[in-house]
Image (cartoon, rainbow over all chains, first blue to last red; front, side):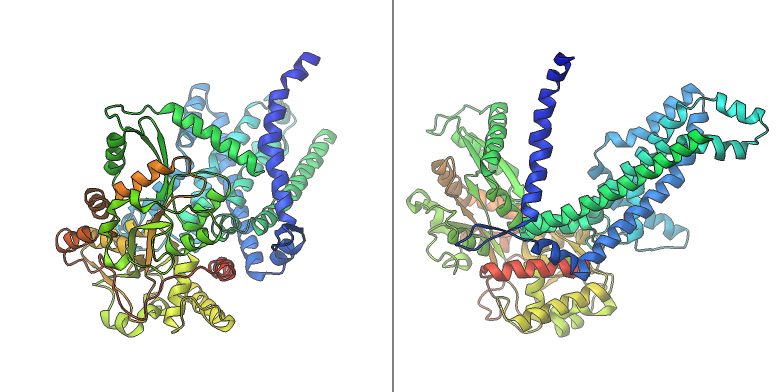
Length: 279
Length: 354
């Protein structure tokens, strides 16, 4: 056993250098400020107070979570049926579907987002098609709708794969039992399949909501700077303003909110799992 | 913490230099050495780099940045470069913060060729620390078919507040240029630090954000205006040259309310690893051939007088954007002011998020 423990050392060192240290740096920056000539660094809560008393920035935070939430809901609504039917397919087709879904993720996300920029802008593919249909020309780039659309496109595979892997390992004898006991297909879906697939949905939500809430390239490219998310504000503080203290404080607030929401989802999952056992 | 960055930087440098083999067809004193250059994107004709490498038998590690601030942040975290090409106000800041070394002008004989427009610039009048690379101004690129030139002439910068053009404008995503426009439109100096004037400019920009649904872009504006995505854009003169070459529906206008005259210049940081080779590089860039190739490639006004004349009569003849307006008393050069920069930057985040 001890030997195995020793094998974890390289990972532990990696984790300390690449994860723990940067986190500590963010923590340090968030609670400090560049001092004057006499005092180099001063501990303070000012960075947090600044953010929490600035309506404009709070509005951006709210918008970010709103957009992330809408994206996640759409991903569940599209991803669940897709995963469900995939799980029902024969083995050969499952592999093909798997390939089709993961294929786009082989290409860098930034490149795919650039491709959407070309398709959504005026004179692009969508604009032209809408023009032929007599609906266009329509301004799509630079709107919240376009940002959500591209986010759903980018993050949907994560949702589908999570739900699918949960559904595929489900024991079909439960469904037979339900049928024996007189449940029709709708009933057995809602009372057997759906509750059993919930852990997949929950981890799918985690994988979609997190990047959606903190992205900055998608909103920068597709939102053309007129859809500002909290990720853009943080990027701005680090790269343009050069105020790492405020940027760190906002990152920290963001992290805390995300940790809390993850904790609540996990808790909801456990409760429903408890219920499943009770049934 | 800085040490950690330095170590990481040094390691990645090792990897980089280990990967590249130097062409060895020359026996210069710099044979096999490496030069690290940090420049703006789309600012150099690629063959200029390989010509330099061939001539001196060295390897150039060439990196690009998107804004002065991003460059500054990276240098602050411990990255070392031999030559950097910041803008005027950033050079001023780096001089103040003692980050640059004095140039040995005897090693840069090509400085003889400097254009009039980039001589005696206020931030470094004697070229003690810097030698100009490109220069220019900021203006408006507009679609001749969709924008009434009378509107432009009557409203100037305020055309970006004219709701007739709502949804059809590109703003430049930089606090410096956006506040410059606001200050100029309001008739203030772009270097003002008056609280009320700053508040006015902030309101001016918020009004654009709230009523015009502007897109905030940087380098993307070149492609976007070349393909005619929108009708009006705030554009650097050199980028305007490129757009006008690509799309003949577009024209360039520089408002009479004044604009920002800027210049980007080559500097050698204090912590440069190879200052001698850096001098050679600066001298090489100033030569007629390299200047010509770069200016023709990027569309920005050359710091070489001969090249400037040649290109304005040849390749860029009739292109209003190539040579910046000079000797106009409402045009100003940006002066570095630490508090003001921080404040505008803060306000700019708020404008975009409004």
